[in-house]
Amino acid sequence: MSVFGFDFGTTNSLIARVEGERCVLALDERGLPHPSVLCYEGDQVLVGREARERMVESRIGVSGNIVRSPKTLLGRHSVHVEGVARNPREMVGRIVRYVAEHASQLHPGDYQRAVVTIPVDMNGERRRDLREAFRLAGVAIDQFVHEPLAALYGYLRSQPDYRSELRRLDRQYMVVFDWGGGTLDLTLCQLVDGMLVQTRNDGCSQIGGDVIDETIRNEVVRRVITGRGIQQEVEPVSGAAARLLARAERAKIELSSRESYRVYVPNYFYGLDDPDIEHTLMRAELDAMVGDKIQSGITRVNALLSAAGLVPADIALCLATGGMVNMPLIKTRLYEIFGSQRVRVSDRGQTIIAEGAAWIAHDRANLCLAKNIEVALARGARHPVIRAGLDMPRQGMATDSVRLQLYCTDPRDGVAKIQLETPIRHGRHVQKTDPRDSLALLSVAVDGQAKELFERVDMGLTIDENLILTVEARSALLEDKDRQEIHTLEFGLQVGSDQARRKQEGESEKHSAQGSGKQPTANGQVMLRANLALHQDMTLIPGDYLRVVRPRALARDSNPTEQQIREDLYYRPCSLCGRRSNDPLCRCGSKLPPNLQSDSIQRH
Figure 1 (tube, rainbow, N blue to C red):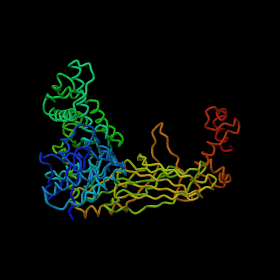
Figure 2: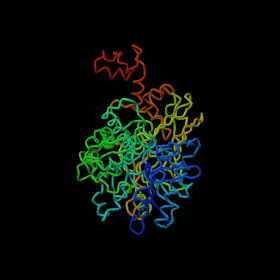
Figure 3: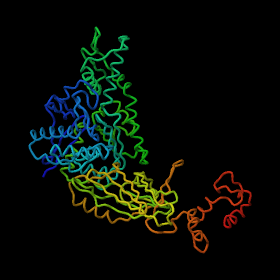
Figure 4: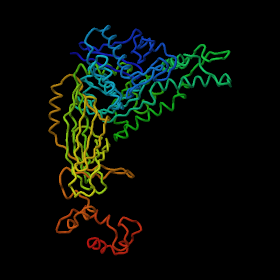
């Protein structure tokens, strides 16, 4: 059974498939992707371009009988369209079916199984709804892939000599800057021996191209009203706002190659003698209108690099895709950061994500986990629960559940704290000093009166077909439970079709050694003191707690650790003034000569 690529976007949707060694696209009659729009007219449902031409209002979501970008409604049980409750999954399913049927007419073939792209910040509930919507349309999702990762894969596979390009970029870092109509998605990747690995992701749905278009439209209206000295409140004629939004989008596109563009919408204002909107928009004027939003998007690039400990000079390639990146202001900002030689503005910005998904489907390039998933333990240690390199499950599958039995080293506060982390560094070979990102924090109630290392916590982890990591924890005595879903994982893809080499490399990675250690903590950062351990080890019990439950364990002949002695002394009240030893008002020890202070501490 063949598998095709499907880019189901907020603004537009597109199918691509590889035939031979050529990627073919299923564009509409105008040679463009299909608008993600529905129009309900009685028993008839219009989809795509025809529905978009019926738009009266321009906002995303439901407006009258029009639903624009139903993808944004996923996660809701239902929405009302002209008083009728409709399921967002069914809305999305209609668009998927329409686009798939159109593709089968243009390029006959099997359209029952797809690699589907998703934004990096799409949560688990919406991913499940999207999978169900495709099922309703008769299309099974073989696997999900992040949109910017698919774009980079498509860029590399489309190079005339892509193997030479892989050699050039080996061990190099790359940034994908995907600014489309609905979202701005960023991913930082590294190419390691033909494996395209995500290092860090970022996504934002607040400054998509549609938001930029609305900003331009509103500014044009404001300037026309101000320029004509209109004092009264005015409203647009029905349908005029949508027509002006289309002209604003056109102006944004045209001003990529021109210095000015005439925005004209007849009969816009309701009740005015001169109801038309006519405004010559200059490129400099456009830059001023949207400059703040553009800069907020560019700022995310610098933040992405900074979080990974990189600077722009470390980046060998910046791939800019999506409908927004042709704006001169965006190009200029990217050139300023990376230099013109390292920025590639894709001339297939509207199609490259679908192309990447098609090549991934053609190559049967399976996703694998890019980074270890670790649990924080007592004394700053970490245990890699799921190791990098694990193949991600495809449709209808899930990874084997990984289960751990953890011992609570300090139950005094009645809570066992489970912190999951992932290293910033990808791969299995992680250094002890590498910083970590927190993935989730779970807590379960434990018996605060239990003996040390007696209360246990059972933890299980599973990754499903939607690339969602589910973590469950339960305490043994109180049987309290906690559960979280994590959708912010990073992945890797083998570029090309040499799957035997990919499997061989994956097997060699499985037997690599892995260390764990402490995470460097920035000044002012609050750090969780983990109270869990893999084994019943007395040295992991805090010294201040050990004195309460087993005082003799701190005697010299019991061989307590130096850290346990320090913890006991640090938290025990001063024998002279009664204050804790870390209280700045306790000056008792400071009055002793230096040579007596250590002796006093030993006797304390």
